[in-house]
Image 1 (cartoon, rainbow, N blue to C red):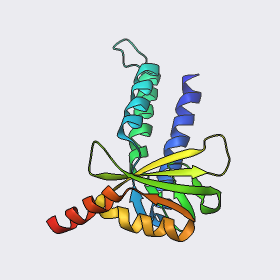
Image 2 (cartoon, helix red, strand yellow; image 1 turned 180 degrees about the vertical axis):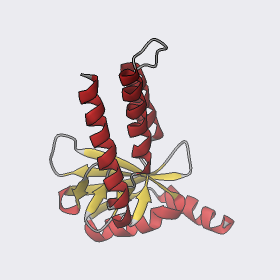
Image 3 (cartoon, helix red, strand yellow; image 1 turned 120 degrees about the horizontal axis):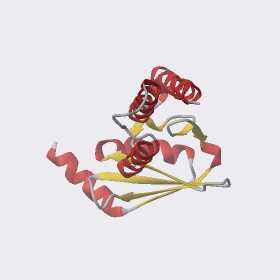
Length: 165
């Protein structure tokens, strides 16, 4: 059983390497996912595959590869490009996105883009962009989606940021 799990994790790491080498080049404006989501996933991995002193070599390799797979997912770019919204393992095409709402992050100096889909199991996706990337991301979204709403306070924060640098 451990060998099957190890093989699956190696396939996942290989797919992530493919995404890093090929798809990272296509992302025009780089965004990030929530850090909290990544930490929850890492916590679940640590709970499912705990490290013990008495475990077999296969189990230790399995646990290590699972953590490597989660950490290597950090290197896969998320963002927007001409094709659509780029998430870690897939791209949501622009024609499936109904509206975009952009608001200021309350905890950090970032713009949070909420992408609402026309239909689907999950109807809302979120990406964060640094203040430097908000305007290019907004321009690209506005050229592809008709309904784009932006908080006015975010523009004030961007102008203030530009004056600092």
